[in-house]
Structure formats: structure tokens, C-alpha cells
Length: 430
Ligand code: IMP
Ligand code: MG
Image (cartoon, rainbow, N blue to C red; front, side, top):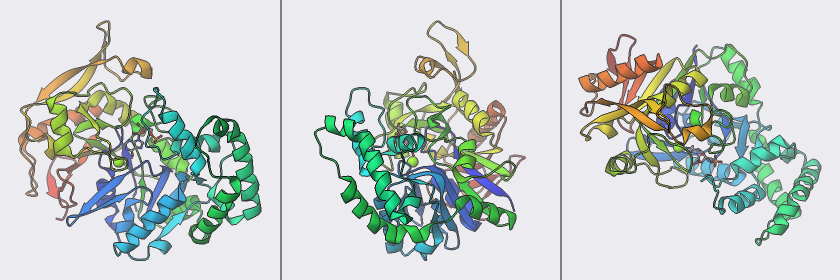
């Protein structure tokens, strides 16, 4: 059975939640690899909206098991809240269908406290304030608290004291009191009661499912341009969001994934600060935000909007090595008089660049060179793409040397066209 992976190709919010939902309809296993509740995957089915931050989107399919991999950072209260909401929605057997790798890291109130102090400064990055960055810092410093310690109370106590000691000089500078190691220990012992039974070796369980021929879907979070190493540093998240990050976050080797689907919105958005060459600060940008409903699913912040950046997309395709693209939200561009796509950049001194610069500071000074496309009407489920949209897609396929295999024209599952290699389309349900 093919093992598929879904990766975001821009700065997040490409519509991965919906694409994972579409692709996981028959999946036995859906696995997340990295990040935490900074992600917000919105799924709309039959008019009902669910936003998931931690649990893979496959949870809405009754028979899928959903795993949170070792590369993740998890705030227990958020996970608990999400499980409770899913249960209230009538999702069956949530507690037994969700598994968590004990090597994943805990996000503690201390991590959030530190991030709040940093983000109040003028050089703020515009993070989601979920404690993601500081939790990864703790992991890198070897002072992090893996979930595994919830099953070892004495070791947990010592580890909390060590981390607290390390943070003390920073906490003493701040005005707000932070929770003491002993109070935090008591809180975490209550978490242990419900979280420890969910422990599983995600790497082993995933590899086993693959070798048994089960249908497995690997669910990426955020987007390639937010990758901690290859994104627009320092305006990035603190985990690896490229395809390689999926493998390392879960603990998988080479050659196990047959299809990598890169999800790309027909325009671009970005939340938080950082370079964004095709950003539109005019009426068109406002139109995209309004018609695209571009408010953060996690923080409620208005997203910055702009034209599709095919140069950045080409870089993303290279970093991910995706075999196909899913193009989302094509309906949002419908009412515009013309549609633009960045196909190159011009530097401050007039030099034309064909590729996204690997110097992220240079990226902040670029002017896009656009190619203009004719607008299209909204596709419908009659399985025929408007000619103008077909042209736009053909261009992207040529520019990125990657096939566009899915076209999404609305939030519902039914608003999805499957595009075959020759360009013929069928609606998802046929
Ligand atoms: P952090 O991941 O909270 O540290 O935030 C770092 C940057 O990544 C900020 O610009 C966030 O807005 C952005 N970011 C993190 N997760 C997501 C996401 O799921 N969608 C969009 N942007 C995100
Ligand atoms: Mg999102």
C-alpha cells in the first residue's frame, strides 16, 4: 500500500488539514511528526467546523489510529482540551485511537513565560506564544522534559529542579512569579494519570503498520518556508518542516514513502513577522484576506496576504522532493480582475534572481517580477476546470516540474477535484 506524506509548501495555512482529511479517508494510521499546538488544522465537513492543533486530522475518520511523534512538543492541557472536545463532538474511541510517543517533549508553563517576555520586546518574531521555541531549546540543551518522565516521578522531580535552576537567572529578572518546581510536579502527576496510558513507540508502530501493508499517512505541520534551518531565519518555527523533518520526527528511514504531496495555496499568506516578497498591502491583499477567511486558526491573528510566489514554491519543491502538488483555495481568486504569480525577483541593485536566495536577509529586500494570468470562474463538481485555471495550473506544473494532482475550490471535502496525469479531472466522490 502506498505511504503518503503531506507537507505545507509555503508559510503554513496552505489547507493541509483539508487535504489530510481527504487523503486519510481510508488511512489506518495518520502520524504527526513535529511542532505542537502552534499548528491549526481546520476541517469543515457537512457544514461542521473542527480545528485541530495537536491530534492528526485523521481522527475524524472513525477507523484511523492517530499518532503524535517524538519530534513534537506537547502542552498537556491543550491535548486534554482537544481530546475532550473531540469526545463531546461524538468522535468514537478517541482515547484508544490516539497514541503519543514518550520521547516527545513537554511544553511547561516556564516555556510560555519565557516566550511571553521575549515577544513583548520590539524585536519580537510574532510567534504563536505556545512555548514552542523554548521547549525545543530545552530539548537541544538536554534539559528538556520528555513525556516519558511522567512515568518516572522521582526522575521527573529532579529534572524539573534542574531545568528550573537553569532558568532561575531569567525568572529573577522578570516581574511575574512562575510556578515552583514542586507545584508543577504535582500538576504533572495528574497529567500522568491520563497521558501515560496513551504512550506508544510511534516509530515502531508506524514502521510495523507500513510493513503490514496498512495505509499510512504522514501529516506535516507548518510550511517549508518556516523550516528552522531552510526557512526565512530567524522568522521561522523551531522545528524542521520539510519532508526530512517528517522522517526524523517520526523516526523513519529511507524509502518507505511513495508519495509526497506538497500543499500550496493559489496565493500566499504569512502570519507573524519576516520576509514576504509578494505581500500585498493594498485592496487586493484585503480582498484575499476577506474572501479567504485569512485569520489564524490558532491565534486569531489576521494573516498577511499576497500573490502566489512560484519562486519560493520552486525552492519548497526542491526541499521537499514532492511527487505532486495539491493546489488549494483557487475559488478565492475568482472575483479578481487579474491574477499574478511571482516568477523571479529583482534585487535592490536591479539584479534579476531566478531562485529564492538562501541568505534570508537578502529575501527581505526583493521585488517580485510578476506574470499575469486571466481570472477564472469557480470550478464546480462537474469535473471540468475552467480553461483559465487550467492554464494557471499548467504554468505552475512547468515552472516547478511537479504535477498538480488535487485542486481544492472550497473548504468542504466535496469541493475537491482529482487531476489525473493527462490533466483530466474527476470529482473526489466519483
Ligand atoms: P512559533 O512556531 O510559535 O514559534 O512561531 C514562529 C513563526 O511561525 C511565527 O511567525 C508563527 O506565526 C509561525 N507559525 C507557527 N505555526 C504556524 C502554523 O501552523 N501556521 C502558520 N504560521 C505558523
Ligand atoms: Mg494553520
